[in-house]
Amino acid sequence: MRISELSRQTEIPVATIKFYLREGLLPEGEHTSPTQAQYGDDHVARLRLIRALLGPAGLSVATARTVLTAIEHPPAHVHDLLGVAADAVSRPGDPGRDHSVVHALLERWGWQLDTKDCSSHAALADALAAIDAAGFALPEGALDLYGRHMHDIAEIEIENLPTDSPAAGVRYVVLGTVLVEPLLLALRRMAQQEISGRRFG
Amino acid sequence: MRISELSRQTEIPVATIKFYLREGLLPEGEHTSPTQAQYGDDHVARLRLIRALLGPAGLSVATARTVLTAIEHPPAHVHDLLGVAADAVSRPGDPGRDHSVVHALLERWGWQLDTKDCSSHAALADALAAIDAAGFALPEGALDLYGRHMHDIAEIEIENLPTDSPAAGVRYVVLGTVLVEPLLLALRRMAQQEISGRRFG
Image (tube, rainbow over all chains, first blue to last red; front, top):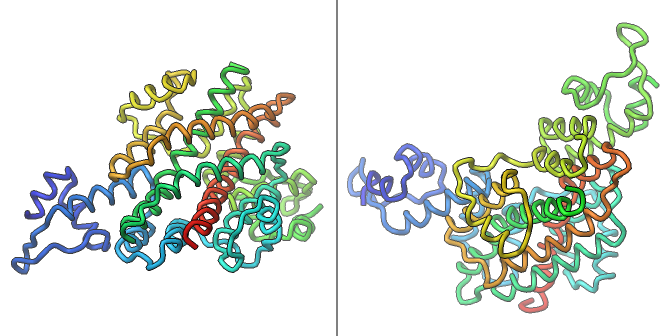
């Protein structure tokens, strides 16, 4: 199909589609002349994905590009998928930060994690440092509770990780990160309102 | 103390402190002459908080200002604190979005929420719409599981909400939102890596 038909099917303006092409989010169509190209169902699917990433998931164009690249060029090993997803959406942690508080937590919880791969440690170390720096006291026992609940959630998520193709795996992991995180946070806020309403409302 | 001493105590450069003053994040000191002002321990505490919000918590200057204003001007009613926190850190949801899917979920879970106050509904509706639009299938039963876990987490959080002063309450709620959200997400990613490592590593 031509770009006008692609625009009609996806309800995305032609100018926006051209922007995605220029930004490298959408692969070029097959050129049938210097000024015309043909697009297929892959482009329709990709446009739906781009809209979801940029729209409600709230990614920047640069981050969306990283995510899409990761889906196109998946790592060879299933376990490395998680690193790709984390890297795609994480801000780099403070490299000078002491991770010993994180390592102590992991030991207490019996979580076996490669201590060489500290990119996820960095996010946790940053979050704990911010709480500490703000003088904010977590409720007694809250940190252990958070760890237990997140572990239970991760169990069902990893259990359902598709292992038939690396592309399917990375898609699941990356979208499960960028799309499910806002879902979890929205649910937490609503749950707080629900409980607060019953108690104080 | 003078600004130079404030800078020394907090290890924040004078130029940065002046930036916070100009941006309205830090209240003015008490002027002792047209070019000199005195600062107190309140300024030290406020600077720690500003650093935590802008640094690891990753807020923009504008959002940090909203958060600080909320802490200074708390609402009269405890239950309204949660709305203040949500408003301070939420992107406005799509106003045209259909919330019926959210209302159906709340009914299924028995969550009693004021259906007039739809700002938190909007965040959940957006997150679900993004998942749907991307063609991403949540694992069977995952949504109910997410709801249950977030409700358990919110229980301990609301239980510990300080009700002695509105300012303490809003501080707890706002910081509990902006500082604990990155913590939960970091824990989920690490838990995924831990489980994936045991299963595939």
